[in-house]
Image (cartoon, rainbow, N blue to C red; front, side, top):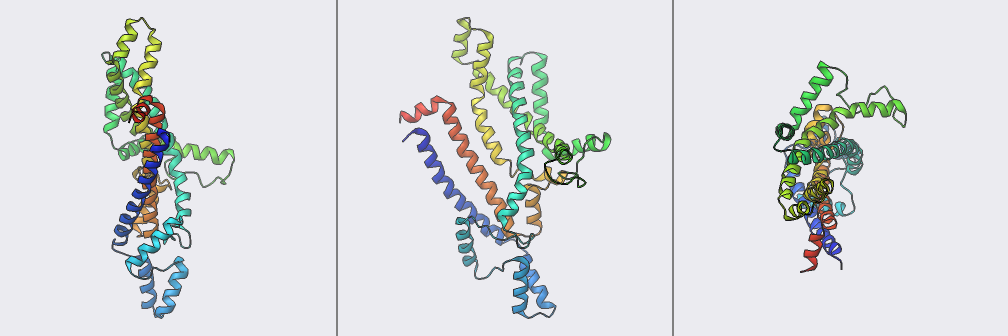
Length: 335
């Protein structure tokens, strides 16, 4: 079995166990949160004079289900449904499976966060190299200071600053919702243009908030590589500066690919505050609403989806690093 196949098998086994553990913990935590909208609905119907049997049936018709049995019975039912990719039915979206609701909302989160993360990565890596090479000059100082400032500002502060500047003081961009309701959904210029226009501020917020971390990490990595023996040997041989620059960038960027993969895994759960500020109907806003309205099934499904994304990102990061860095493969093969 190859190195990559062995690592993949190990990661998949550990990931499966972690998903079961997280699903178990989230189930018991979520179900112990005070308040139950289904039980509240049932009790309200009984108080209005409806018989318990009729109230139970009406509640089941409204929400599509009615929890019954002990907490252990509900846990067994939840885990067996999980193995069939059945996460239950949402209370706040009566009759709709949790998986369908999550799929609908996740698409609004993935695109802007993905664009913002990749944009910040590209810009941060490129400028991080220059910040390291020019670290004794004014350009290096300016780049380092910009990275430190943006890295220290919370996402929600950046989001509010962008709203104040570009939606209030200079009202050139929309900040509420994902698209203008005047346009008919579909593959047409008006709708697509409105989508792009509404996504500018969220994408800019993600990019600016992550830019500082990338430029500082890349600068640190480049400075470390500059002290390696192979760089000194290349300079003594009279190798061209452009070739040396490529060597430096290629070796310094390796650790950042792992961080990038992990960042992409965290993107599903890292958009709560930004989606709330921009009223973007993604997974973050859905998670807030499910907690507020005590939608247990939806809450647990969102937690589980975020967990799976992080686990998959860890697996991808490890395998990707094994592929791009031959030293890892040689170390594994030597064992």
